[in-house]
Image (cartoon, rainbow, N blue to C red; front, top):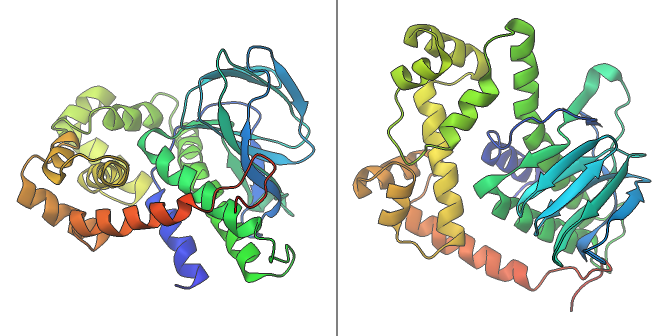
Amino acid sequence: MGKSTIYGNILVDFFYVSWYIAGMQLMISKLQLPIIDRIGEFPLINPTSEFTYCNPTDAIHLYDYDASTRIDSEEFRVRPGDITCIKSGSVYSISSDKPGKHWCVHFNDTPTQEDLAVEIPVYTPLGVNSLFFREQFKYISSLFNNLRTNKATDIMSLEARYRLKALLISISVPSNLIRKNKRSSSSFNWEQLLSWIDERLDEPISTALLAEQANIAPNTLSQKFKKQYETTIGGYILHRRIDKAKSLITATTLTIYEIGRSVGIGDPQYFNKQFHKVTGMSPSRYRDENQQYLNEITSKLATKDGKWNS
């Protein structure tokens, strides 16, 4: 598989991921690849006391525990599966009542021109998509920490940089869309509407019901949505349902029928048809291929020192 295909697939898989939270945002280049300094899974040392650190590089944390974290002047309550993106030079602290681990990537990706900058939200709760992010971090770590890899030129290091860039862009997309919306309307809030959809994927969702939530006419909402996201409301909801189904298929032992019901598509035949329409394969085949992929990744975990775990 070519690197451009890998990059594109990750972007498509995560086009709809995350919510925007205001704060001191990390800015990355729209065109250049990040330079990875280190990546690995690290334990939280002395979790009952506050740990404070000043980042020499940009950093991403993917948490596997409940904690309070402060980044400069802002405080967040993070849960397993949440991500924080911290700008170089920021002072941050983490405190938790229980021990735990988090994936951490330190990197540099400074934009060369202001008009090419992409804004990354400080805090992103990934929800059901956290599994894919976790496995991507594991795989990026295995690529980057390979002892045979020349960090400057090796093809494995290049793939690691492409994959990290794709993840960064994927969590930037919603915040960019929300900022555009805020410039065009001070009263209409896309963030709240999309979050409302995500919380009710197991329920029937109609345009009329969404229009009621947004307090505008159904036809007006449809037109605004198509202009804002370049897809229909029905197309967006279907892709969100299939995204959630993909995570459940990979991470749980639920039957395909149970997964279809949990994402609001109770008819097994119709669920299979819609899943194939979006992914190009049946739910059963998707489970077989991705569970095999996850089993292979297990042996490639990095240690807390960011080294190969042979």
